[in-house]
Length: 401
Image (tube, rainbow, N blue to C red; front, side):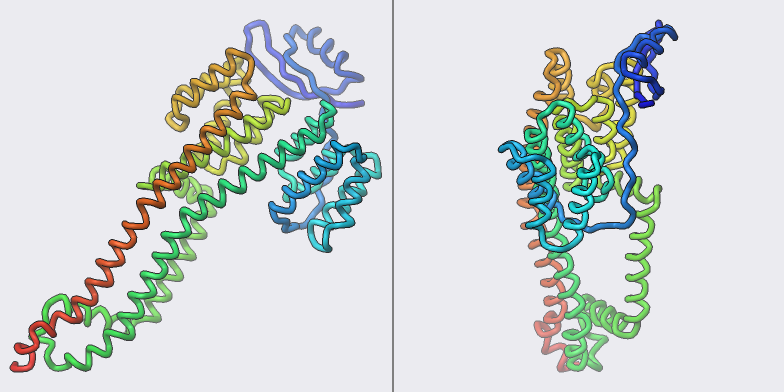
């Protein structure tokens, strides 16, 4: 007998959910009503798909291309099985082709498309699978695949923009460290021979710099080991639950970069939630998936709290009004969408708005970082150069001593 998931309320309005086995959705609803429950929804549970073991590395671009081409073929009348087989034939050998061959085999065995995709959770995310399942239910598979591809493209572009904003200062920092190491370990020793025996009359900045150079050259093994230990220890700590929380707190509260990470989490959450609700996926299920893709511990907690509040019969916007993690303007727009019964389209518009804000934030951050890094590098390298050349300005004193 099939199983059904349900959401019900008791006479006090308190919501509860669960699963039961019945011959049909109508029988399941009757069983719940006989228990004195008010039935909110009863939906059939998809059979658990066996997950294919092993990790398959597949690029996001391959999945996006697959969704786009499959949408075109399905909308032009090509059967799903034939479309998948055609895509398998034109895909070069590799991990993605092996995944598609397994999906095609599942379809030929009579499985639903969503169940075949769910066997590969590392390639097709829960969001992708649920969008396909919604397309199967509504008969609009092509439109759902187009929406899925558009969502994946937005997510990929957002990640690229953020990485680009972070990569520039990181590259400049690495270059600055390299230049300083070069000056201390190669250039300074050359000057040490010139100033040898005159240390007492050298300017203080020069003596400090020469002493630092001698210490680094004499203890470079200890220094390199300490750097490796710090980097390795930090990487390990960030993988622990406590370290992940600390890292995510730092990301949200870091000067200059905090607003960028905050808007990135908001954009990803709203785009996921809006796409799924607008496609007909249940709100509670959409929030559960949103919680898993928002990419920040504090936003995961926020959506978990929203999920709990919805199960108590509250509106989506109510818990969002109470948190500083969501801007008040965004929450008011969500509330307006709930009042008008157009939550899905409104969420999509809000996601577009959030993406534009994120783009502007990235431009602002990168525009500020460039002159700041140039100033820091100028002061650092210029300071070292001045400390080296300062004795030359007092050469007469040095030579006559």
